[in-house]
Image 1: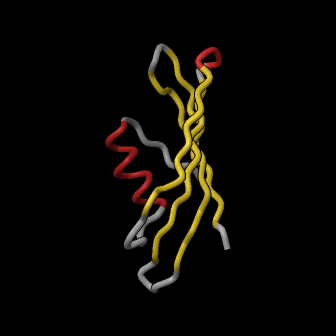
Image 2 (image 1 turned 90 degrees about the vertical axis):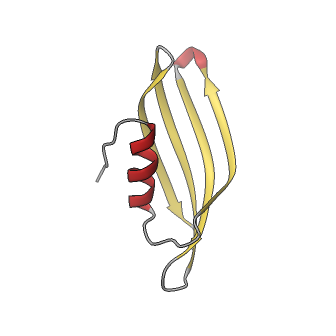
Image 3 (image 1 turned 135 degrees about the vertical axis):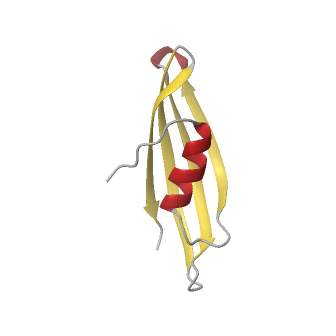
Length: 84
């Protein structure tokens, strides 16, 4: 199920906090960014780590896919995979 949000502030506060709610010490690392200006697309890769309220460590690899038009992001899709 997708979560539709608009604007940078709403995305940061709502989308990310909702997706990883309950991680007491969430951290984003190993961030890499790639951009193709001719195709108006970009990709960001990251590793997310944190600890649940129950004390279980969580690690996930994620990536954002961006589509832009006239220098503004018009679509952002986020995918992640839990690492066991």
